[in-house]
Image (tube, rainbow, N blue to C red):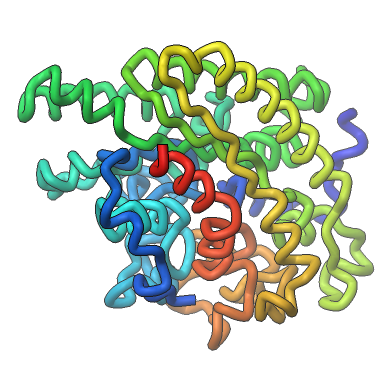
Length: 377
């Protein structure tokens, strides 16, 4: 297996791949969202776990290079504030919170200024650069999934000291949990670095990650979670940085010939199919105990936006808005970087992460119908 994923670019360029801390994946006026959420009685809070696709700023409080709390990040966020989100504006989880009517955006748990009200309505425990594989977090010196679960246990204790154990139990039971991770594991630990390739085939590494994912869900379940949404992987071969790292040297900088790399996207599709099966089995096993476990399809909406980009108003599909769009992310996308004038024309904000417009389209197409189903029941 190892030979099929060897890089085709010089080593200095490949070393930049340490910036790859994804996952998986316009200014949106709140008036564009449904008002149904303001009448929601079924969701008490939004609690988030995972990587940079859902990290709202926890890495601001961690000693790591994987940060985004500086311009041009946050350009479309209220007050043009760079919060630590790896995009130009809001994330899918922010749109969820706004839609169900609990708050406009989800703050990071590690922010020491959070009030009890902010804690009660939901926080993100996520950390950019992390993954299900513990080695992934170690490489970036970010928060591993296991530590995020520990933070959630601490969070429960803080609520219990304020509202009591029984009220906290009901609050957690009615909270919505979102998990989004896995892309960093493949991109960093398998496609780029040889460490995991030496020990695992693609198939066995998929199974290893799925086991870690299931252990997280089981841990959340044991702590009282009942409504759990788990995101699949994006079409990894369409991420601008992977196109740059693994395309042939004759096409990598040819804007018209930069295309998605099926070899890497197919790994994501296979993983997503296995994840769906595992989640369906968990749902069937725990349904009688009140479980509502859902798979969130990220791959489908994103590949549809790429293939039918003109119908969504996108002009650029294989480069990011920041810098050249080929390699920039985190500190390589900084106040000195060139930035496109209209990010709504781009699917990707930097070489890894989607724009706010892309996140909103994913929310609208794949997440909102599931939220409606949860609220209606």
